Image (cartoon, rainbow, N blue to C red):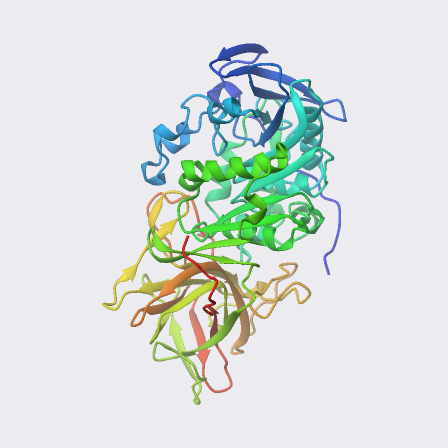
Length: 559
């Protein structure tokens, strides 16, 4: 049971906004074709603190519904400052206004002429907003965003209806504030964002991400005051406690209409949290779309923006359009990079999913039956290239869509703990690895990833299912010498077609599967590996991979 206690937030001094390219602070009004722009508009919060927003609104006197975008990267910060650094991200310059689109947000030059106002906010304690910043929490930041929603709804240029959109952090805050159910929040569009900061961003399977959180902290620390030092807090809180509980969205309290977009490609960051969000929110009107592409590209592509507008037209402008007839779940099942089929479902995960066990055989195979004799596989986690791998070749076309789980009987010789890194790969009939998009910019990713520190193997039985283990992370259970123990590893969701003669490869090793120089995502360099890892298979050791086979149904169709 969670030991709930108070905690003291660790802050760090803010970096001067001028170092982050801030153009200068002060209210001013600008006009451009189709819109009026107000910079640094003050918004007073319930405790008297003032934060600042930029408002883009249509010309004329007609009140407009509002899209609020809330994130710490700077309401002045042009998206292409980031997108331009990653030429593989797929975002095309002709899709966006170079000056007015904030990072991971929408384009006012598209929305304002179509009758929408855009409000971009600098949260408390970031840039020139007053107060001290805390990030992605149920309490302070969610309450601040609530106040900003109600402020936007009360402005004379506003119709009184507010929606929210945006990628990553601009989605995190949607989960948190929507759980408070602000009266004038009419619809949300969460587009790939965590909902559990411990499990999805800082500690994958209990193993600390040693790269991305520090990189992220550097980009959210511009302030005239102080900001939460999330990396120091992670050092101080390596187990799941009240600090991390405050960074888990209360999803079941969300009732607002929601158009949720996730991807199979953002493992180690957004895939899990977005799908958990859709599963757990209580909204009666909710839709899920899951793609296999890169997140920034997919958010900004014109066809996606057109669907966003249809959604907001229906709920913010009360336009009678096709949104109520949208399939509740739309999934892209990948054959290879940028090639696949779109299918529709009524629920997530699809209710007709058949979960099959593939048992590990020490000779490097996955089998449909448990090998009668027990055996073992060993590898040295410190040796480059050392791993255990197991293959299964399909004899008929098979779609795997949803959650995989790996149950292993493990033992560590030479250590009282072990870090397990799991990957699923697809091989073509010639034995060549089939690569998929990964994160926001890469094209050489795996089918799916999973992680677990063995001492964190204790399950949260109340929230685990037969196909998705959820770990408590509230204490460490060290390994005893010579004693094999069972562990269940959550493998993040995926959607992949395997043809006849194609192979699923399971990899288990002691370090990240996705490694390249300068990587900022999915790096776990502070491991507890020593000696040898031993995986027991067969006989009394039911080590197996659980796979989600999507049974064909007549009404499924290509997009």
